[in-house]
Amino acid sequence: TLGVSIKESCMNHYAVFGHPVSHSLSPRIHAAFGRQLGISLDYTTIEATPDAFPQALDAFVTAGGKGANVTLPLKEAAFALCASTSERAQRAGAVNTLIRNDGQWRGDNTDGIGLVRDLTGRLSLDLRGRRALLLGAGGSARGVAPALLDAGVSELIIVNRTAERADALADALGDPQRAHSRYWDDAGAEGDYALIVNATSASRDGTTEFTLPFQLANSRTLAVDLNYGEAAIPFLAWARAANCRDVVDGLGMLVEQAAASFELWHGVRPDTAPVYATLRDKDAALVTAD
Ligand code: ATR
Image (cartoon, rainbow, N blue to C red; front, top):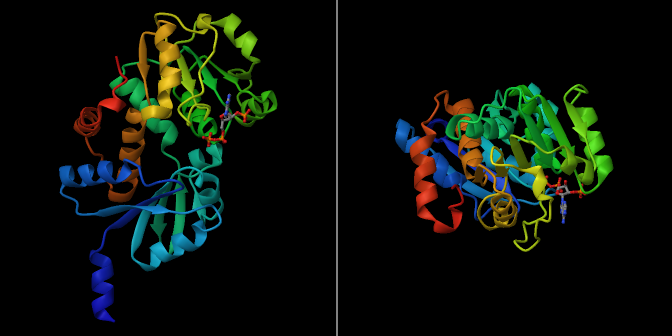
């Protein structure tokens, strides 16, 4: 009926899907962007396991869903159910942003550009011609590796507990001049990294300690954990002990990937600085930037 279609077109309905997702900061971030730009929107969290995800997404569309973020462990599942995907989503093999277009989902991935914007913008790190070390070869690592290459690193060294997965990621990046896998011991011997990225899930339980060799880092190294809050504490403690120049968690990346998703949906780019500052202030446990 006319009543229903008017109601639906007035609704700007967005959500983040994940499992678990209840503690996600994305609703706060998108609400703040919307207020900043005078765009009224409604952004919620939707809990879904990979099995339940397709149905949950259908229900979301029926309720007027226009776009969604997708977080762990659903990024590969989201990629699989898109009618079309961006090149950067294809390179990551994962989707974190869904855009409703002509009754179909288009998938994009803003994680990599989010990390790079945080590093090069907020943290003023020039990655061009510098060496980067990526710890981990799972979904998170795959999401950010292409963007690090695009940012112009001279070399991207990938190390992973399971060496074969590091080899596979290095191969998949299709840039044999710059992307290499290494065993842990060899990566330590090379040292002199401008950037060390923790993309492992090792300390998501908040307990696992990082026992990497200190010679990986020096006083010019920026260390970043893609996790934020408690899950980032063990790696950041290691990075501080290793005397890194800067030590940051993934909060900046989270805000930047959200801004890139927001721009895809609404066509305008929010100012991330005040939103980042508010989130950083709000929760002392999140303060990790030196
Ligand atoms: P995500 O989507 O968060 O990347 P994932 O795809 O399961 O999750 O990948 C987890 C990453 O953390 C992998 O690189 C994993 O190493 P393996 O490939 O050897 O499994 C890494 N990881 C998880 N627990 C770890 C631990 N205790 N020590 C070192 N690496 C660990």
